Length: 297
Image 1: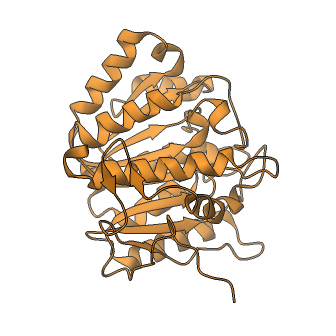
Image 2: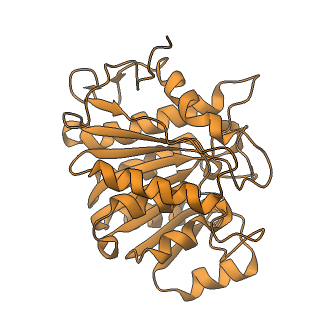
Image 3: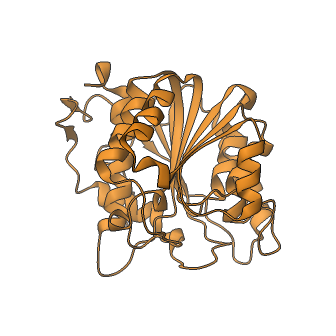
């Protein structure tokens, strides 16, 4: 019998006792280029077994400080339509009644984010969503579906969230660009701007000023390609590791906001490297550390 997967090889807690609930949505029903995101959640958990449980930056030990509950994967049925699967993700997440456990979603393609939030958020109109991504994901529909991964943030906006703050965008069709410019809820820090030190500092200051409940969604293609060479729709450019860490610290440690949870999507494991899943596992590790370490280090 296969040993159940855990995060950081720590004992799997019950949901009632856990500080962190790990939700796996191994779905790739609308991917339009590279495939393999369905394998990502378990690959990320396996990669996490090779991380230390101690964070030297924060002087913080996860073992004994944070209890994780890795929940059963929400697996798509054969030939299940995307809307049916996403509705099921919403129902499952709503059934968990996640309050107060911090939730950590592992995708899967980015379409799962809105479904996860729909099931978890009690008052979406109070929530700011911070998006790290190469793509705007603001299309109304793509390839005949409103639930395509290219529509992920449009469906998040449909939930009635307070604000969408997008970071690292470097691919958008004209309609998405115009929507981002015209919708007062959307604020975008484009990748071509963040190469300027003053603009990157403006981003960090903006994050530090956030208040109220926050959800963080990371499509790993928002990072530099060297950190995620196996993602489904890679784009040149992106945040390097140091800038990514600066963004996470400003958002989670240095702001007055309350990070309710996060998701990490669009990792694609490939046979010749472990960089993709190791990067995603480290992102999850840092997010949780910043959220729970006393004073953030």
